[in-house]
Length: 94
Image (cartoon, rainbow, N blue to C red; front, side, top):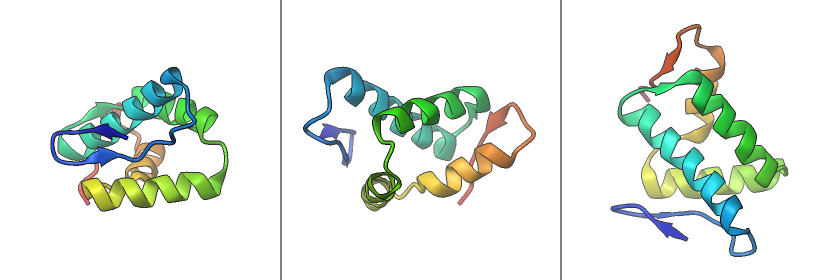
C-alpha cells in the first residue's frame, strides 16, 4: 500500500510498479476533485487507465470501498459527477 499523509491507498501487491503508479494517480485525482477541482478530461483518462489495471467490476468495487473507508471520498459519486457534468473541470461536493 502507498501512504498518503493520513492513510494508505488500497493497492494489490501483485501489480507492477507502473500499475501502482497508474492507480495511485487515479486516487490522487479523486482526492483533488473532492478537495478542489480537476480537469474533467484528466479524470476520465485516469479512470480509463485505472480500468486497464482493474478490469473486474468486483475488484473495482472492493478497492472503491477500501479507498472511501480510508479517505472519506467516494470514487463512484466522484466519477458519476465527472461523467455527467458539462463543465471542463470537476468538483465533487459530497
